[in-house]
Length: 491
View 1 (cartoon, rainbow, N blue to C red):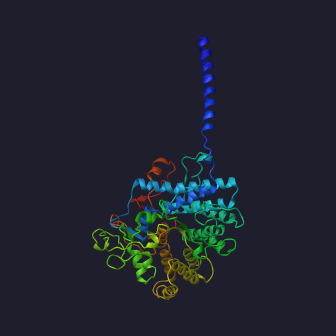
View 2: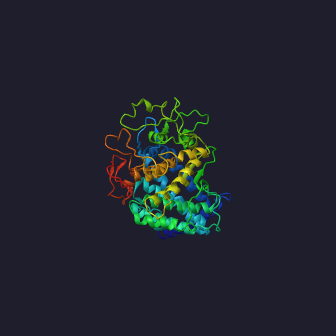
View 3: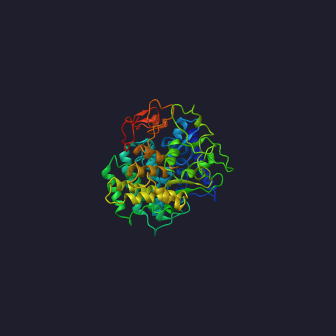
């Protein structure tokens, strides 16, 4: 018996050595000389930008869901759709985009490319801001620590905590950008390596976030705004439409603009059910806005008409496909179109609001308002003489008409944000401008405003042991308002 044991042991040792030898040889044989073993940081940044554009400005989230809540678009015969799988996938896609950005930062650190690191950090912060404004409290400070800390169930940070982290990250990025530094590389699909424009984008985002939080934490908002406005050389912001943070699509299948991929009609025969909302059309019509034919097409009868949500929306004959206007070509029918992360018009409206509300001292509200409106009109290729005429109208001109100046700033900002539906929805929730009281029929009996929030994905509720218990979700889309949403009497 002893000899058999000894022989068995020797066989086991020899077999193990044989396996190790084979495994070593197999691994060396299995390495492809044509495949990259490491991925450059610029490639990962490119993937992060692509993913972010596809989810944030894609058909479901941008053209349908949040466009409906923001008063921009509506689906013929549609509702505030909720599908568990889609809701889960949208959460996952937002986090996938941030994860790619974090990985780009990590590799950029290894490559000692500070500008690329700063660009990836800016994108991560941008997507985190969007994610929080959609859902509220989210995992963030511990969300990307699986590799280093083995954090499987990251804690949920509160909205104020998230905003503080994002502002700190953007300040870090702003201080890191160096126009004489390293090239960001070919993965920079947003600015083609223009570090100066990335720097402006970063600081413009800081202004956006400061204004968003200004009714919830005015002191911090004022500090952030002052640090940027009083230091233009250190913290420049967008100045012209050449600075716009637009992701331009190649226009060749499969890399076509997402709205076009869903509703595009190269022959001009548009048939898709996504149409413009009555809130948008009426707002433009009420002031003879020259952007109306850019934003919408005339219907079958030669007039502009938007879809109206409400308890009778399915019985309203004016809501049928012949009567409701299609989305204009610039936004929905160009395969080589754009996905707008942020535009210059918004920055001037942000500054105008800051001055008008005395968040910073100075008598510059009017000039920033008029410049922002001009930027939006020029971007939509409105002729110079038409811009002059429009700016002189009673309800448009400063200190004129029945609406106050702050309302003018906010409504024009909302118009300029078309196709940035998550942002437009956030602004409508923050300001109640425009006042949207038309609610989809399934919710119109119980609610007087469009949705307050997205429902958390079931995967988080069932799997993350740190899921917050103090968030109230009511009727899927309602319940707890965002921390910066100080409206009263809304439900």
